[in-house]
Image (cartoon, rainbow, N blue to C red; front, side, top):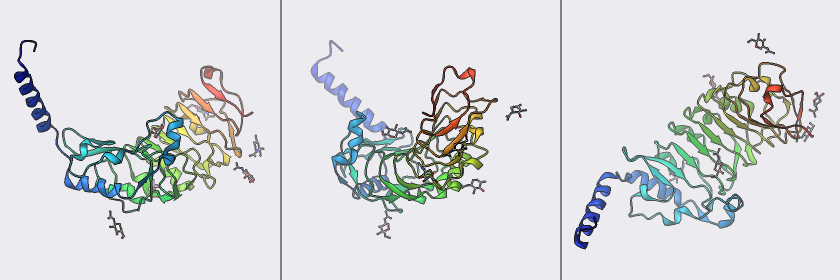
Length: 290
Ligand SMILES: *[C@@H]1O[C@H](CO)[C@@H](O)[C@H](O)[C@H]1NC(C)=O
Ligand SMILES: *[C@@H]1O[C@H](CO)[C@@H](O)[C@H](O)[C@H]1NC(C)=O
Ligand SMILES: *[C@@H]1O[C@H](CO)[C@@H](O)[C@H](O)[C@H]1NC(C)=O
Ligand SMILES: *[C@@H]1O[C@H](CO)[C@@H](O)[C@H](O)[C@H]1NC(C)=O
Ligand SMILES: *[C@@H]1O[C@H](CO)[C@@H](O)[C@H](O)[C@H]1NC(C)=O
Ligand SMILES: *[C@@H]1O[C@H](CO)[C@@H](O)[C@H](O)[C@H]1NC(C)=O
């Protein structure tokens, strides 16, 4: 390039730009419309995302830069598949959002969504819509710390491609036995389930069998769990992280044999667990009852 004149270099640059513009498939009018409708539901207030500062996560109103007359694939927080052009990712965590999400939310016009992260906002006690079950392609759903509320509906376990589900720190969300069963039994690809501080006081956890062997990480601290924790969780072939702290009424016994899980993190502090950890878990970080 050293011997090229300025005009040549400019020409090159223009060709390169044309090439990129020709390659990227813009999002459809429907996708644009869906996002702009969704945007209208909210006002921005920094305090709604105060957790993000504490966790050193970037926190700013991503939607503010969304412009009507531009390709929505280029918008902040939006990811499109470069081959099909479909909108596949929406990451609006820490976006200062305050407002309610109706059950017929325009997000449902984005059927190709694979990841949806709305964590650390304030959705003003909105229910987690049963219509979310229409997101058949969704592999990641993260609604952590975003002030959702209400009984979780059974349709959530119809999102059969879910790999990671985080509903933690929505203190007003209530989970019943049947729904929890649906999550850990019917979602056979689920690897990460995070439900800390969700109200599970009505869940009879002791009767749980046939837990999906796909589970790698299960986090249920401060869920108000009671009864006896089923031993079969310790037999899960892929479980690496088991977080059960702050369930004072949860009784548990470490199995004497058949620990098959490659557990490396176990927290049972402030629970009613007893028994000995087997020798083979010398490497696991265990936090026992105080
Ligand atoms: C949702 O329903 C309300 C009331 O029925 C309606 O006004 C609104 O346009 C609907 N929104 C969408 C995105 O369909
Ligand atoms: C959910 O999103 C928050 C904010 O980005 C992040 O801190 C958390 O780790 C995510 N949860 C999972 C299970 O990835
Ligand atoms: C889980 O799957 C079983 C068998 O297909 C079905 O009977 C049950 O209703 C499902 N549970 C939920 C919560 O969808
Ligand atoms: C434990 O059980 C007792 C008696 O049923 C109840 O009063 C208390 O609130 C429970 N504690 C927790 C943390 O669920
Ligand atoms: C704690 O576990 C013991 C059995 O090890 C049981 O007798 C007791 O009732 C349990 N306490 C609570 C609060 O669940
Ligand atoms: C441990 O596994 C063996 C062989 O699979 C089985 O016979 C035995 O009943 C199991 N023990 C317990 C406590 O489940």
